[in-house]
Structure formats: structure tokens, C-alpha cells
Image 1: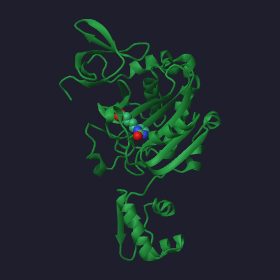
Image 2: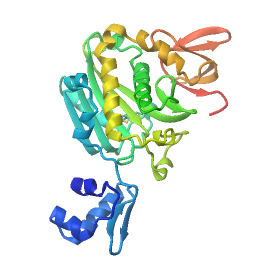
Image 3: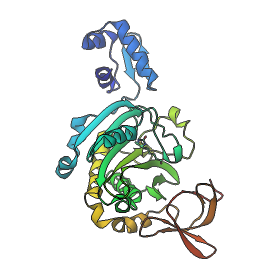
Image 4: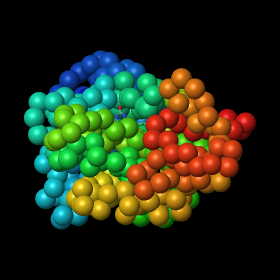
Length: 322
Ligand code: BTN
């Protein structure tokens, strides 16, 4: 299947005969393979006399291409770069490796997730070959205290990666969504493995909508957008992944020393909900107030009846608007 997908990635027609020769299988077997490709959600067209093509082509992840976009410093920090086709969830795979031992520096990317995980038990819609699904494992001494504010800082790093593609318009929604005009473009999911007071490993999962196919977007239960709508330039997935890994490693390399303090100002500058009336959804209750940025630990500052209260958990939505 991999060879077939890489051949069809150019979006051009390829005859059944040519493909059969390439793979050493019959034309009927190729036809069966094409059905499997369609089952991935890709738009396959078959035309008499021309053969098969994937409409619009594919920008598949390729290790060599991705590595070309990694800095020398990052290459030294990446323990393993794992590119997968279909997985349940890159976070799940990363977690398994972290549970088995020190997985610090492992980076996993997949073309598709069948059980992509979002925050608060939500599903992360992860169609084949169109967006970015990445998990990176990093070890920290000093337990959860050492990673205070990390998920917000990761949001800043993802935003910085987008800026490298000329996309300056992404904003941040507490605690760690990436938005454009209040529409979700990316999400971050951190999972912690190990000793909350000692050595722990953090799985940093990042999902970025790059070119969400409309047919899959139906399953998204909130306002969304993707990078293809924010720039005229085509954002290459390998390049984006490389730049993103660079930014994440730049952050992780000294986070234990600088902490969230080094990212707070930038987070506040791009706060999508600054000074707006919001509703904070907590475990079992809701709290209304005005969003007043974040404190030095990354907790949300909510003004309630003229007083600032800090919250480190939950999720916000615009009061009345969402
Ligand atoms: C959110 O709800 O905003 C967080 C979404 C995080 C999605 C990413 S995609 C890569 C990684 N693997 C997962 O299963 N989830 C994260």
C-alpha cells in the first residue's frame, strides 16, 4: 500500500497495468488496493484509458524530507523519529514507549489516527494524509512542578512554527488551543507518565489542521479552520513537522531552567480572549467572569465581581457567543 500511495501522491493518472508492474501484482489486485485507499477517505478517481489518480494528490510524510527541515541541534536531541501510517493515537504509542522506559526525545508522527484523543475525552478528527498529528516525549526531573505552564508554552511554540510560514494570525485560547478568528486550528494534549514528584515523562501531543478535507470536517463539533485557509502558500507537511519539532525542542531544551516565565509575555500578547467575558467550565460547575490573561504559572486569571481568581484547570468559552 505504501508504494502505491507514494506513486499516486503526485495526483496524476497511473494505469492499472503500470501500477501492477510496479508492485508485481495483478490489475485485479490493484483494483482491490484502490478500494482500500478509498476506505482511508481519499478521493480516488478511475478513468477508462487513463487509470487511477488521487484527486489533488497527497503530501505524504517522508523521513528524509522531514529531517531536511530539522536543525542540527534538533537532530542531536531526537532519539527516534517514527513515521507511521495508521495508528490509534500517536499519544497512545508515545505513552506505551514512555511506560516501557526512558523515551525522552522520541518523536512520533502518523498519517492518520483512528482514535485521536482531544482534551476532556473528546475525539480529535484525524483524516489520512491531510493534517499533522505529532507526539513528542520529554523527560523532566522535578516532577509536575518542573512542567508548570508547559502546555501553554507549547502553544507559543506551535504559534512560532506557524509564523515561520508567514502565518501571523494564530491566537491562543487558554489553556492551549490555537485559533484563527475564534476557530480552532490546532490543539495540544499533554499526558504525564511517572513520578509526579520525581522523574516524569511528558507526552506532548500536537494536532494541527493543515488541509482538513470538508467531508471529514462534518465530525468536528466546534468552529474550525486550517492552515490552508490562512495562507496562499502551500504549507508542506514535512516542512511544518520539521519546523515544529525544532520549536518544541528549543523550548524543551531549557524549560526546566526558564519555565513559563519565558513565555508568559508572548502568550498574553496573542491571547484570543483577553478582557472578554467568558464562561469557565470546571469539573462540575461553571464560573463566569472576565478573562484577564494568565499568571506566572500559566493559571487563568478570571475577574469575578471585581476580584481576580486564578484557575489552573478547566476550559473557557466566550460567554453567550459559543
Ligand atoms: C485538543 O482537544 O485540543 C487536543 C488535541 C490534541 C490532538 C493531538 S493529535 C496528535 C496527538 N495524538 C492524539 O491522540 N492527540 C494529540
